[in-house]
Every structure is written in structure tokens, then in C-alpha cells.
Amino acid sequence: MNHVRFLAWCAPMANLVLAMGTATAVDWRIFEVDLISPRNMTYSPQALMPIVFALQNPALADTTAASIFWSVWEGNNLTSPGSIIDGVLELALDDWNRTSSEPYFVTRFFNTINYPEGFWTLSWSLQLYNCSDNPEKQGVQFITTSNTTTFTVSRQSGKAPDLVAATSSETCGATVAYAYNVTGGDDGCGFLGPNVTANPCSVTINPSAASSIMAAATEMACSPMETGVYPNVSCPASPVESSNVAATFHMAAAVSTWLTLLTLVTALSHLG
Ligand SMILES: *[C@@H]1O[C@H](CO)[C@@H](O)[C@H](O)[C@H]1NC(C)=O
Ligand SMILES: *[C@@H]1O[C@H](CO)[C@@H](O)[C@H](O)[C@H]1NC(C)=O
Ligand SMILES: *[C@@H]1O[C@H](CO)[C@@H](O)[C@H](O)[C@H]1NC(C)=O
Ligand SMILES: *[C@@H]1O[C@H](CO)[C@@H](O)[C@H](O)[C@H]1NC(C)=O
Ligand SMILES: *[C@@H]1O[C@H](CO)[C@@H](O)[C@H](O)[C@H]1NC(C)=O
Ligand SMILES: *[C@@H]1O[C@H](CO)[C@@H](O)[C@H](O)[C@H]1NC(C)=O
Ligand SMILES: *[C@@H]1O[C@H](CO)[C@@H](O)[C@H](O)[C@H]1NC(C)=O
Ligand SMILES: *[C@@H]1O[C@H](CO)[C@@H](O)[C@H](O)[C@H]1NC(C)=O
Image 1 (spheres, rainbow, N blue to C red):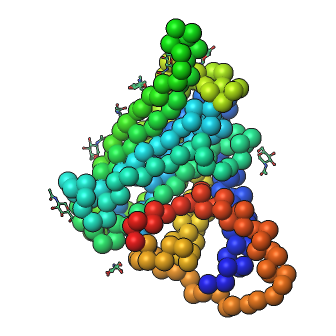
Image 2 (cartoon, protein in one colour):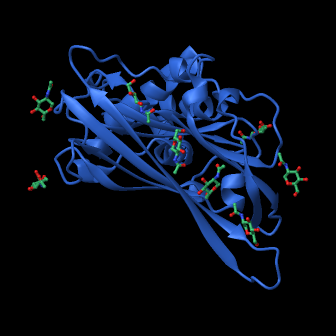
Image 3 (spheres, protein in one colour):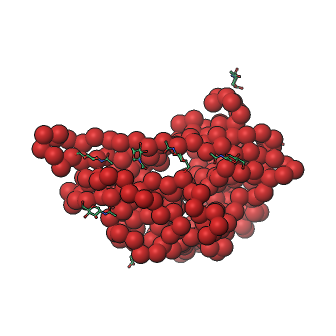
């Protein structure tokens, strides 16, 4: 694999990931997490089945030290092959543009090709830190909200995952979503008021954003670091090797972008 060409491809890609999606104007201080994919439906087997969370007002992931803990398993058995039982997304540590008000999409991918018939469960918990503004209740407490989505995989009746359809006006209302009113937090520690109504329909993924997410996933799955982790992804043929000094400098400059992309679209290597 020619790293230079791959890294050069990543640079515009990372910007795309940051820029994709739109939100209607909402209270700046409402932090919301929406599960865009998977949904309660029947999917065809996928080499890269997407888990996609949308974060609205993503900078508040820092203020609330937000994390998502997730597991996905096939059938009734948490330890069945294909299951991932200890996923962690430390949103506050992720590296993205903190000043952007656009929704931010957090993605993970798993393989359902080898288990083409049956149901799966995605279980996830959103954990936020609530800094008390009450002097009698000093300190930080964390609050956790959990939910579970089941879906079916079927060769015959399944449909490919469709991130555009998942955010369409017909289906966005069914999105599992949690929203919190965050006040304060200038010192990095936000106070969470009572829950507020979530507004998942303010997030849309258009076709080009959806193909960017899936293209980035394929690029991630085909990168040398993920060899063997996603065996059913068809990867493009390796580009022709080339070596010159200019390309080496370019690679050094692109490394931080490459790391950014890795944190955006990361695989769990223990799948391999
Ligand atoms: C999931 O979909 C099935 C079939 O449409 C439906 O019967 C079930 O109530 C749904 N479950 C949830 C939690 O929405
Ligand atoms: C769950 O799957 C694992 C791995 O295939 C197997 O060893 C275990 O016996 C299964 N447990 C149950 C309750 O079926
Ligand atoms: C971050 O986002 C802001 C607002 O969208 C934009 O003006 C700025 O150029 C972005 N910075 C980077 C480094 O992308
Ligand atoms: C955050 O803590 C305060 C008490 O300091 C409490 O009144 C508030 O309900 C908590 N927020 C949430 C979302 O639990
Ligand atoms: C408010 O949040 C708490 C904890 O995060 C959760 O248990 C409860 O169901 C939420 N209430 C509403 C109305 O969303
Ligand atoms: C999980 O999501 C469903 C669908 O939005 C909702 O009806 C249910 O109350 C949620 N459960 C919890 C514990 O928040
Ligand atoms: C959020 O909390 C602030 C401060 O308590 C309050 O003024 C505002 O109305 C709340 N916003 C919503 C949407 O509940
Ligand atoms: C998926 O990859 C596994 C492991 O290499 C292989 O055994 C299986 O045949 C592949 N399935 C398909 C449908 O390509």
C-alpha cells in the first residue's frame, strides 16, 4: 500500500467528515446524541455494518465529558462469534473542530456477512458528568442513560443500511435520542438541567455525506493497520509504489490529519 497516496486522500476526507450534515438552529447549549444507525429493521448482510451516532452541539461533549459504552451481539449470546461487548467512545477525547456548530457523526463498523440470518442487539449507554451547582452536593456525578435496539439480518428480505433514509422526515422521528440542557461549563464542567425534548429531525445526512461516511469506512477497513479485521470488505487494488523526497515531506505533514481520521473512523482491532 502506498501510504503517501492514502494519506493525501485522507486530508480532504477528514474535512469532509467535519463538514457533513446540517442542523437547524437550536439552543446552542443543548447537547444531543442521536442513534442514526442501526434501526429496528431488517438489513442485508454487510461487511461494514454502520453504527452512527450524531452529536448535536458537539463541543458540549467536552463540557460534559461524554462517553458512549456500547456492545453489539448476534442472537442471544453475548459471547457469540461476531459480537463486540466492550466498545467505548470517549467523545471528549476525540479530536475534532471544537468551534463548529455542525453535527458531528461518530461511527463504528462491524461485520454481519458471516452471520447472514438472525437478529442482533445493539446496547448502548451515554454517560455524562453533571457538575453540581449546589454547594451542599459538592463534586461531580455521572448520569447514565441506556437503550437497546434490535435488528434483523436476512439475505432474502434485508435492505442495505441507508443513512439518508434514516434521517429523512418520514423516519427521523423514530430515532432514539437524548438531549440535555447544559449550563455553565466555562471551567470544563457543565451543569445539566432537567432533560429536554430531543430534536433528532434537525440532523440530516445527504447522499454525498452518506457516501463519504461509507467511503471513509472502506478506506479505514482497507488500511494496513486493519489487515484481517474486516475480511469481507472488497478493497481497491493497491496503488503503484512510488518514492520521492517531496512525497516523504508531504507524508509528515499529513500525519496529524491521518491521526484525526483514525479517531473519527476507528476499528476495533480485537475483531481480527
Ligand atoms: C421493531 O419493529 C417491529 C416490526 O416492525 C415491531 O413489531 C416492534 O414493536 C419494534 N420495536 C421497537 C422497540 O420499536
Ligand atoms: C456463546 O458462544 C460461545 C462462543 O461460541 C460459546 O462458547 C458458549 O457456549 C455460548 N453460550 C451459550 C449460552 O450458548
Ligand atoms: C472550525 O470550524 C469553524 C466554524 O465552522 C471554521 O470557521 C474554522 O475554519 C474551522 N477550523 C478548522 C481548523 O477546520
Ligand atoms: C445535575 O445535578 C443537579 C444537582 O446538582 C440536579 O438538580 C440535576 O437534575 C442533575 N441533572 C441531571 C440531568 O440529572
Ligand atoms: C431523563 O434522563 C434520565 C437519566 O439520564 C432518564 O432515566 C430519563 O428517562 C430521562 N427522562 C426523559 C423524559 O427523557
Ligand atoms: C429507548 O428508546 C425507546 C425508543 O425511543 C424509548 O421508547 C425508550 O423509552 C427508551 N428507553 C430508555 C431507558 O430511555
Ligand atoms: C436551559 O436552562 C436554562 C437555565 O436554567 C434555561 O433558562 C433555559 O430555558 C433552558 N432551556 C430549555 C430548552 O429548557
Ligand atoms: C467472509 O470472510 C470470512 C473470513 O475470511 C470467510 O470465511 C467467508 O467465506 C467470507 N464470506 C463471504 C460471503 O465472503
